[in-house]
Length: 258
Image (cartoon, rainbow, N blue to C red; front, side):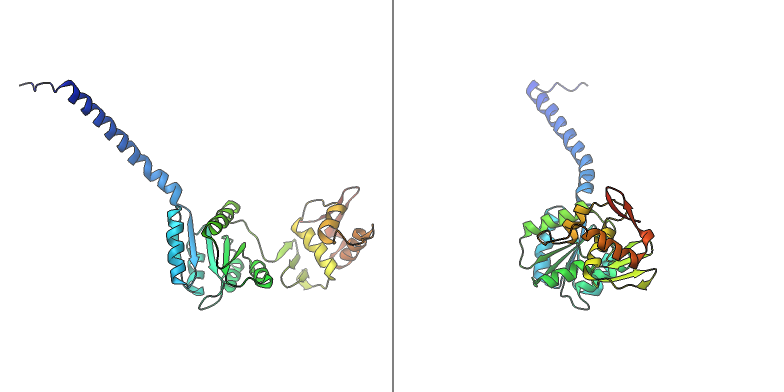
């Protein structure tokens, strides 16, 4: 027996219902892919202030991050080393050992995960210590969540590129924090100006740098600098690190051999 045809209006509603069901099924198939793209960014929070961590977890999760947390230095270090995180938000004052020590140990083991340090200390030396130890950014408490979020996004754009605390070019090494220099593993004494000149050259190793650029970055632009100051200090530096490491490109500038 053939079932009677449904009224025309009912058929139209059934068709629309089927179309809506197909669209919902298609959206359901697409959603896991979109979610995987959104939720793949993993952030580690290391802080012993429970209320702040809870608030940050909620806020970051609402922005689409996967968030894990630790409440002391040793636990934070273990997670950072083995958790495959895209960024770490790290407090300075922690039980066990400090955030400074956490970031020092990460960098010593070649882990270049971007690190944003948090601290109630706003002194310039506190910030300088964090950056010299290997942190990528520093934010003082209290802070705006909007600013924290923007700082994390900026770190993610940079990625986990190697940013060693100790600069190296061949067998030449320089530690900006401790103002130490080694040539073939032998400590070498430099004057403050020689050190600044070598640091800038090492940060730009392999690139030809003109005299004007060196004057802008190594000398105070407002100071009364003799025209041949660069040549004089390049000569001083060559005597201490070796002539073959610092090449003159005539009419252009100088290049430190990488």
